[in-house]
Length: 191
Length: 142
Image (cartoon, rainbow over all chains, first blue to last red):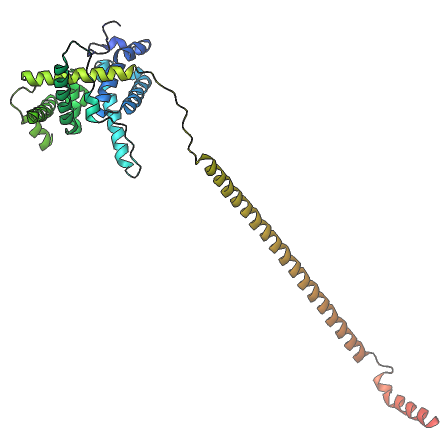
């Protein structure tokens, strides 16, 4: 499936993928995107890998029940979000355990930029912007963060986000608006 | 739909996807950064590490074995003690029964002797005066 590059949003997967032999293709198409979403949500590489594996395992087990009513990506993203929720819920319940988090700090996460043709000054400015966005994202509520990342990292449209999260489109729009307001505020504070 | 949901739906009037240039640039950089990070992490070489054994592993095992042995030997010892106590109790009861039997036998023997003594006479009672006379005569004859 050449159309499924690892960086572009892959939303055109259709019901014909539902045949069991197509599961490998679906994984090849969407694994990177699922991992990217989970990585940006958790900022924890190990946790993102684990949840991605769990997501694909769960998808594999339920592949025969996938009826193609939504896109494969939407279905996989929904599984990933539910797994992430379960993970945090379990973690909250296990509050007596020593919490070991491998989440990288914001500065480290902001260090990553594609190696493009940018001047040193542009790169510094870009890193600064990225750090501010990360700071704003960190302060968002769980729903706002999910909606924000699905829109501006995964580039899903409002309807797809509504399908993935199970929220109404209006609610998604409102969460997105509030998330953007936070990012604007954070970017405004740097000036 | 609850109040919060309604509130959320009516919150913004403008399109949240309308982005001013600076915000668009920042979000573009953010997306590129996440992409680069994700790509790098996806394709990083992975090291398979054997789970590190702490220096406490051996003492933990030794302690575990010691606790296990103590538990088992304690149980065995307790069982042995119970068996010994049961044996001693059995022997004591047997001894008591033996003594009681001997005492009963002795009492029965004494009773029989007494009865014999009471019943067994040299002459019947009706002839007793005559017997006493005979005794007197023998005494005189002597």
